Length: 223
Image (tube, rainbow, N blue to C red):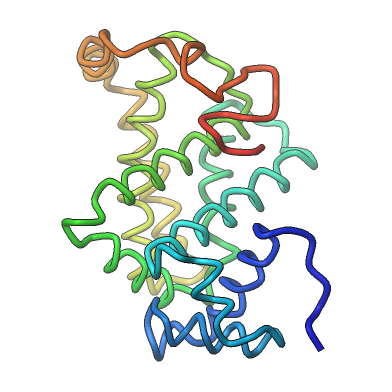
């Protein structure tokens, strides 16, 4: 019997979560999505219908699901701490729930590393760091909006790759690495100014379609 669903995003959420058990063996592809659909009691073709863009679309949705879960967790309340510590805590919480899925994430990164998927990878990373800053309480509308996200994108990506190979207890080495990278960023104001100048011709975030500082949508991403 087909389980109840609410909308297509809910179906996609269910499919990518169910696919996690199959990706380590089958990769992000048609077979994993077909098996996920069968596990959920859907028609086997549901995976292909839900992700008409194929494996890359499924991977991007998986990243979006992780971002939404983080946003929901943050909305329930963050520990009282300075902004820098808050960002570090949020990066940790973006990764920690998926500890048992590191092979799934490795395969996702491998797929997105292909030259024809570079734009998809960049968009997914930007959405993640935007979600991180938004959860941290950032509502900047000037050029610091871009510099903060450009800086965090580099730090988050490096931390993610470090975490995937970390064998230390409780990923202590990864979190120490993250703290060092954040400290480095705070110690490089001149570099931040260079990034700001390089972005000086970009439009204000307020002018970008779909982004409402006081609302629920940022670059088309639901909070």
